Amino acid sequence: MNTPERAFYYHYKHDPTGSENNYAYEVMGVGHHTEEDARPEDAHLVVYRPLYDTAFVYTHGKMFDVRPLEMFMEMVPKGENDAMIPRFTKIEDVALIARLKAIQEEMYPKTDFD
Image (cartoon, rainbow, N blue to C red; front, side, top):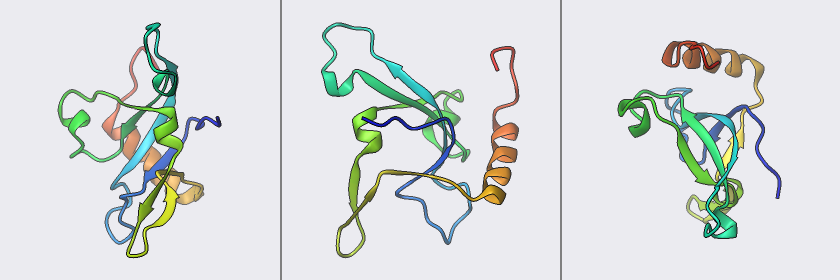
């Protein structure tokens, strides 16, 4: 299965008429569940963090979100016709990436771990 690269992504719930960072995320990487009894479909986890300050994990300690890779990469129904679209879409617009990078730097100042 393909894995997402470290980049900015929109969740399918992103509202293009709203703020540019609503449902925007920074993918940090993909991890592996270390327990032997992990189901194969849950063994690889995408690690990411929100770029909007109302997200639960941000307001509760600037934690990370994790989601099984299979679920991160899947197609989901959306709209009146339930058209199938990616759950997450990589953001390619260079100007938008620069603005999201500024938001990311404000929300998550550099630490000794970066």
